[in-house]
Length: 154
Image (tube, rainbow, N blue to C red; front, side, top):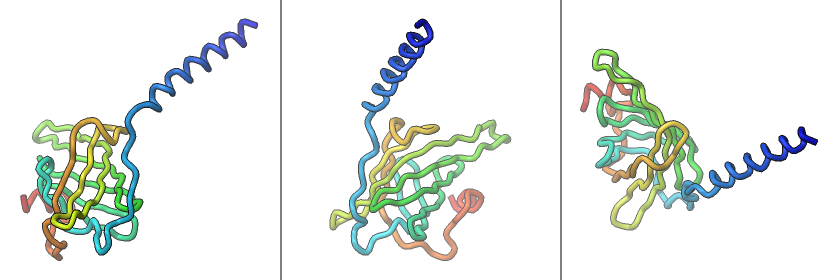
């Protein structure tokens, strides 16, 4: 009897914890990708500066120039990109590697093409701030594709 009561208490506690997690705000759903648009290109973000993104099929990879540079890689569903980001550490500057996740929605409002999203640390895609960017131009052959290259350019 005591054993079943303990199992029941654990189950109730777990259900209570999970119900709290379920009420946390989620990532917005996706819409169809705007016609003729892609994530590929040079983007400018007020939060993370220049971003060079390349879309191949449903996969997007890229680098950004904020700080000492960082990487983005993720998967598309419609206009929504769910991505992981990483800013490599630098021992010479006593800086640790940082990682997290985020999301973007590609929006074309007829005047601008932009990315609207958020970022978080670790497994959180939200909560640490906005991450927005405006489309600047198509990628060029000599644009940076690695953190080392972006450090040389920016």
